[in-house]
Image (cartoon, rainbow, N blue to C red; front, side, top):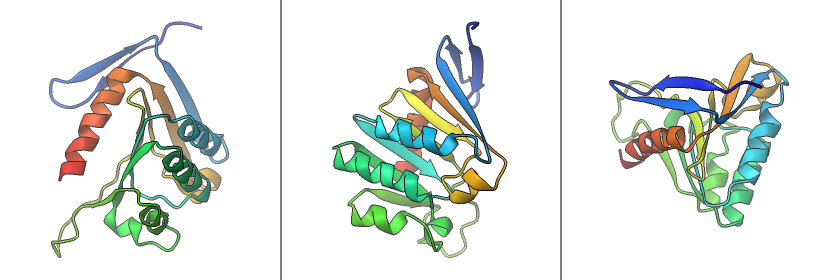
Length: 168
């Protein structure tokens, strides 16, 4: 295998160069993304920050709850509209005392836009991202992509962005 070299643009005059880091790629339907996400969450040791537009997957939700029970510091940001959907894991996370923020803020009646991110940062070392929402449809029906990138430099960029949303 050759040496991976990727450049991610992270906004004006910002880029992250990933050289020699590990990147796993998955496609759906039924391409192994679900089991990969569960495996990575089950391996979390210290922190798990999730920003997810739609989160209805029972299997991934259970992995998040297991992480919390192991003592992993979990924080979740969800889209406020999607959090109220029928199969959302949002109520279960609240019951488990996991801090959850809903964006955009619901205090203003006519806010436009979505919290449309789909990523997680695990232990400040790896990023899970792609078009893949954490739903049964993403695994079984939709044509989606998922990347698991092991890069502390890239994880830092995502973590900084997560913090900005969290403080909003």
